[in-house]
Image (cartoon, rainbow, N blue to C red; front, side, top):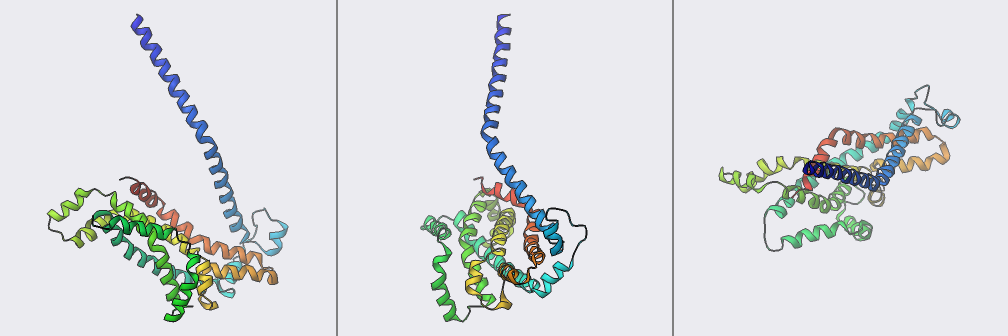
Length: 297
């Protein structure tokens, strides 16, 4: 009887302990969840308000600022796309960002694979140099890069801008892909060698497909940064016809003091936001899987 009572008492103590631990955990995490929740609501509200405002007229925007538009003015997008040349800027951004993205992944993936799977003298030093490259402010490189690109004759060109995007994106991409390749079991690599695969075949037919979530994650991070990049394009692009979307939006916002077409500005903002939002919505699951994969060694 005493044994049963002691057992029951221990169970009750254990339940109380678990309950106290859960309450402590919730008390510790609640402020973080609260801040993230408020920030998420603010971000969602801002996106929805800008999108709704882009379908209003200028008169309705100032008269009924917080109301849902009763009539959709699609001409705002037509005007932003054609008259303000946002369509041209959209094509410029698409060409330079996608081409830079493909080249970055094409260069960074094999480099990260070798640094994570092949042990050689200076391996850690090279990886450290890539990590150090992430910490170098790109603003410090503007003057020497401007001089070099001018001497090469590629300043103020789409090719030159794409080349700069590739160079500044490689250190981060190599760093993040090194973790992904390092998390893949070595037995899969050894099985490929036993089956007669060469080193390149092991990389291309086994390791590269397995690292797809990591490649998608790196692609999304780079795309979002390059798609919204402003400073490098501002310094190295002077031709109005070669502007990217952020430069075009900045020019549009400056023109507002003369035209007052604020709904056109809202339409331009939506044009910039849509690709990144769609990319994240479509590939969010693979991105989360890639982040989880790269965190496990």
